[in-house]
Each structure stands twice: as structure tokens, then as C-alpha cells.
Length: 173
Image 1 (cartoon, rainbow, N blue to C red):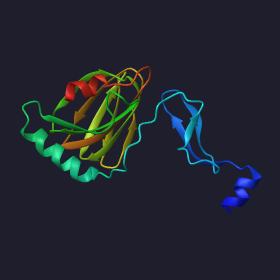
Image 2 (tube, rainbow, N blue to C red; image 1 turned 120 degrees about the vertical axis):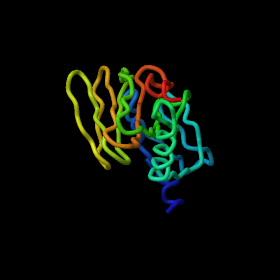
Image 3 (tube, rainbow, N blue to C red; image 1 turned 30 degrees about the horizontal axis):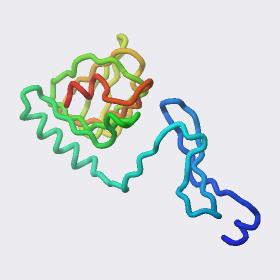
């Protein structure tokens, strides 16, 4: 099959990546005649190769809730993926019951997945209550998060503009 592919000049599309930042779809192409690594066409962004990692969000949620309960501010956070060199960042946040995180600007596209507990998201005069397993799409503008009971959420943010830490995440770390 490899010989046939080489003779016919076929290229195989291996993975299609959707960049949230630019909403452009790019293809990762393998050349069967080459020993080179796959390359992005066109080369808009450096892809950092990292080993596969697995996290238990359930365990991280329990840990963050325990830490939030004893923390003076009633909150605790741990970055699961991302950082200054990435467009996307995912952070598990533990929030003690009755604690409200200050209002923050949504820096791009963001979601809040409730890993445990119950929370309220307030934005632009509207509010939504969410429970374990619910996913909230954060609206543009300023938002505020309140814990109805001891809770943990997974905040996922794809910053528009430049990679880095969102205002909410920087306050939590």
C-alpha cells in the first residue's frame, strides 16, 4: 500500500486543526515519500510538540474544592493546559459556597464546565444557574461567577489577539 501511494503521488491528510483564534482550518500533511515530520501549510504558527497527558478532572476538582474551603479568599485554581505560550488555557477552579469571583472581562472565547457543585454565571444583567455536568458558553463582555455550594469548574479560554493569561486566571493564580 505504501509503494502504491508512493507511485501514485498520493498525500494523506492526517489531522485537521481548527484554530479558535483565527477560526482558520489548516491541514497537517504527511509526505509518504519523505522521512520528514508533518508540517503545517501555510506555516502560520509554531506547534509545540508535547507528550500525551491524561488528567483526572474529578480528582483535580476535589483537590481544588478542598483548597478553596481553607483558603482565605474561598477559591483555588490550577492550570491544566496552556500558559503564556498558548492561545488556549484550561484552568480548574475551586470555589467555596457563597463566594463570588469578581467581575472579569471575557478575553476571547470561553466556556465554563461545572465539574462539581452549583454555580451562577452573571453577565450583562442576565444570570444562568449551572450544575455538575453543565457547560456554559460565556458571553462577550464582563462576567461574574458565584458558587451556590462548594463547586469546581473547568474554565477554558481561547484568547483573541495574543496568547497569554486571561484577567480572571491571573487573579486566581
